[in-house]
Image (cartoon, rainbow, N blue to C red; front, side):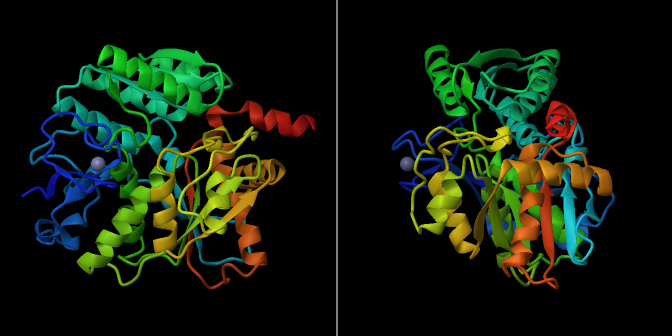
Length: 388
Ligand SMILES: [Zn+2]
């Protein structure tokens, strides 16, 4: 039996059995989460997962799909958890290398799941706002499923991402301003045309896809959760998705502890870090965001409250890094480890020295840094560094 039962509003807590493709809560416009029947889930065992399948769909029982689902897949997930030399004095640090995904980022996990579920719900057209990476992912999976995809990007979006989205079959429109402006635009188009809005957390079908990173990390560590996860926060999909799965694994008794999550943002756009460190329940909009980490240039994440709640539950930490530190980290991991990460991803690496220096983390703690996206789509940011 497939454990997925339906959707629940995170605000008014109403339950929806989900026969139609829902976005936000039809009653209160709150964000929807997917619900799993954990009794049904407990009938699965860790042993069933001991096989060589290198795909996140190995964990289909944790995903919001019906029994017998044939996924829309390009073999996303199943990425290495590898050691790194970039921090020579730290023995217990590993990187979850998400650059190995089909379009070079962890966005593929969310897009594969969302497009699989939406095509089952007979969605024919979708729109989304993206800084670029999610656009490439949704372009790929949408054309695989025969769904029309229209991506709305902020005007400063990276060229390679724009071109790749187009080549993979999406229609692309640039919107003046930040990703929040692109998001408002996509929402208007969805309302007017009836297209499904697959933007971050407007759809409930993306975060569980990224949550499979938590399942893989625990399995790769012999069903042991690490002490810390270092995660660069933009829209917070991976943070919320992973924390949900860590909690489920703990309740199932598959792991003995849960990790603390460390949220990293650039000094030029750190609305989550500031809200968390000030003990707020809501994220306030960041005025005039400015950073080279475009995936983290999200002035007001839609799921702000949910991100803060996840961080609090995990007894997490939150810190900022400068663009200069990000650029340094980007070159450092490229040269020492052959890991080509983009600035949004390098932010997490840039935070590591600070975490040890301030005593946030001990050298014996086990730490996993999420390398969220490849730098091969953002090569011009290497050049910019070298000419300075
Ligand atoms: Zn509601």
